[in-house]
Amino acid sequence: MSSQPDTTAQTLAELIAAMPATFWRFHTRYDRAYYEYSRIHLGDDKAARHLVNMAFVHLATVWPEVERNPGGYAWTLLKQRVAAELALQGRTPSARETLAFTRAIRAATAPLLDSFRSSFRAAYGQQVAELEEGLELYWHMTRLSERHFDVLVLRDALGFDTKDTALIMGVSAATVRSTRRTAKDRLAAAMGCRFEPHSDE
Image 1 (cartoon, rainbow, N blue to C red):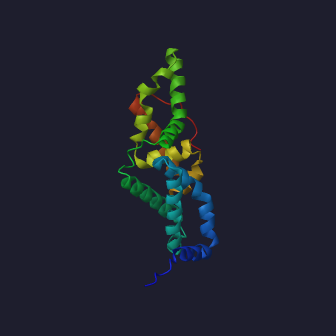
Image 2: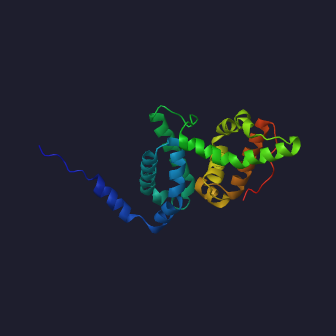
Image 3: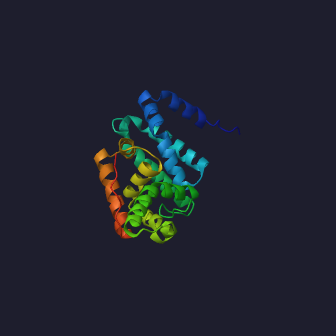
């Protein structure tokens, strides 16, 4: 008995060809953010690329229903797929041990730690580089809520500005600014210090 031909590739090609320009503009604008976010959590370039590609394929199948406001839906979809992939690996989003994740944490917390060091030196005239591990700043950041953590990663680690972070997450710019301020305040409170104020733009 002859086997049926695999039409998956043809179906996918037809779907891609049929997608409107609005979909491709969305893809162009957010592909990098989704990939970098996924890579931070998964710690694997190929796995992150595949996950994001498949997320966009799914998004394409529901585009007519979400086209008017796709940001929030797409961000939720991405986070669900990242969580599902981590679950398959026997990990959870809170088990953030990948090298890429560690680098992202360091990038996001560097301005906060620099600010603390400046304040500490001004008050006590001491070098505090050796206190970095004792401060447990990285540990405290991983204990933030998902939204607080995501804002810090997108804004401070991946370098997206407030407007783009808001568009990526499907929230308002005011929400991003407020969430970022609250995240920094919670980190400061957990560490028993104050950070020098700096722009949330």
